[in-house]
Image 1: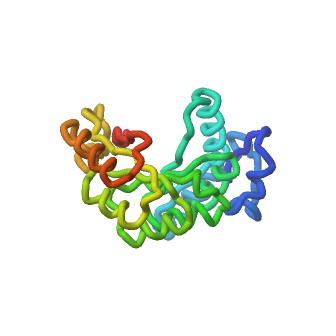
Image 2 (image 1 turned 90 degrees about the vertical axis):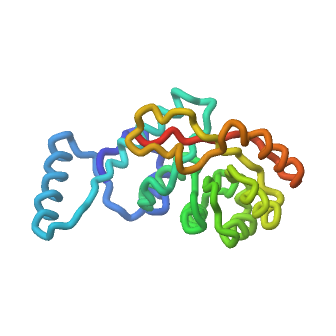
Length: 211
């Protein structure tokens, strides 16, 4: 599990996905030796693997909260759905960005309240929208009139975030601007369409791509 800060809340030790696992506080040399032992073992069977330092994740989360106390962080589950990671973040109070029914189910299984989830997928299956409505996930993204129609039909109580197209990905290794997002000239018509459909737009979202 990696190194754990001494100030770690006891709730994290008992979090779903973490509870029952062996947690140690190794020195830097011990951690290096541990990682090397995994590398040598995995090389024998030629299997890919990754090492997650849960202590580093917790330290970064705490740093975010100290530096940006006015901003609510939403962890994108699709980045890494490792149960121990999700459980630790849930215990720390993080919110979650879910892109599918499966991701919403995984987060709710941790005991997370639905109001800590944004269904951040601009192109949703109708069955997934119905599921979100049934469990009380009442915030989602959109960037088209077709998506508005689906939400109007299946989740009228859902608040909306208009996903806009970022003007520049700033040299991102994985630019996501071309994939989703409304163009500047589409924003006003989409807001008018949302109002006509009786839907409440509460903000905007955008993706700057992955570095």
